[in-house]
Length: 221
Image 1 (cartoon, one colour):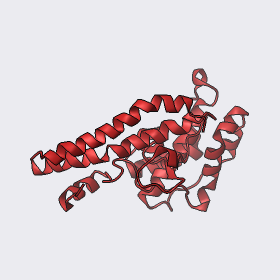
Image 2: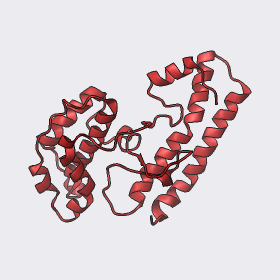
Image 3: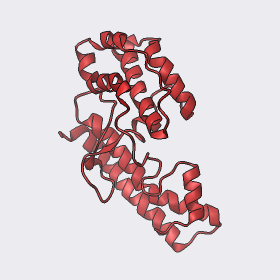
Image 4: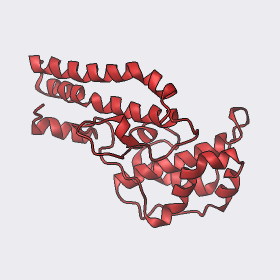
């Protein structure tokens, strides 16, 4: 669909991408070298919890300043990694033994990142879905089969990945409808093409929602 500049300005103001909606369009997958300890623990978190090693690794984690993180993409990735570590710490002993505090080497940088982003220091859709994807193949249209998640891998089941990647695909498929609604609100009129674009987006997203449950729990790859 053709989107005029005024509509694009509104989308930009609300951080909506015309192609992928509320998804971060090109999320960072790696922070500077100083933050490698966060990446290492996030990448290994499932095994660390399984073998009761997470607490030892977190105690060894240095307190890393976030001052050098400047871009929105870097801060969104930092939020994703730190909330992954915080969730692992809190729930590592099971839901009936949740820990009530988070170590300073996680909580202090997390609060700084949250202050700069305007997000809460908790696991949220904005991080674990909207900023938690990376392409693994070239794709002409957003496809859950062609992306992977960056963090928040707590179980070995492939459903862990599909839960987030399929949700991301739904977000992207609704972008066309969001753009059409934005244009209609701005210009104060609904055209035939408006309803067609809304129909297209909702139809694609609905189709993905219908297969989401089966895919998440039955895919083996």
